[in-house]
Image 1 (cartoon, rainbow, N blue to C red):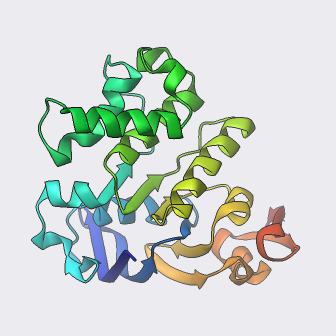
Image 2: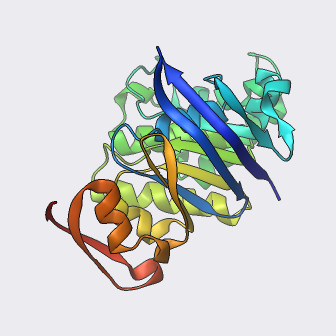
Length: 254
């Protein structure tokens, strides 16, 4: 089963540290939630794992192989990255957009095998009926499903999702998270930056909490104690229930 490990990972923007000595190890068949306040390093960590950013120190290992030794195409065959914003969408149909996920496996000209895989992804994600529509004409929820479907067409072992539900209404949040969980059931490792802690508590199997570019906690939902949440988010809160039924109730700033 696929495994990602970061060792002493550090990154800085113009001298300002965004990540500092991040150590993490997670494996396939689970949904990992990257949680923490704004500016804690969640997006930066995802980009370093996908080699969109080159860390100043440390390394990212994919099944024991340093990704700095892999080509960009090799990384894209194993990992599918979905950015936080999908506002800059090209004038393509849904099918054409999903087919772009096959580029790491061939050329810009799709083959019959590529079309077959893309077609299967459209069915799996419930997008068949809108496959010929221009992606710019879709709702936010539909667009997000298409972008995740594009990543799925890469047939990755790992999905790196940067706040995939942040701009969606409640119904579309559930739809997207259910699609993500289906990929986990298929054996994928999904690492997702997420702000909504209650959504994360409902769906994630494992958590990595960041603050100031450092890992402050790793574990299952029971590790998200009231004390940890109050310290990291600087709030007063209640945590009710256990496991997947845990709910965070923020009360006030500390």
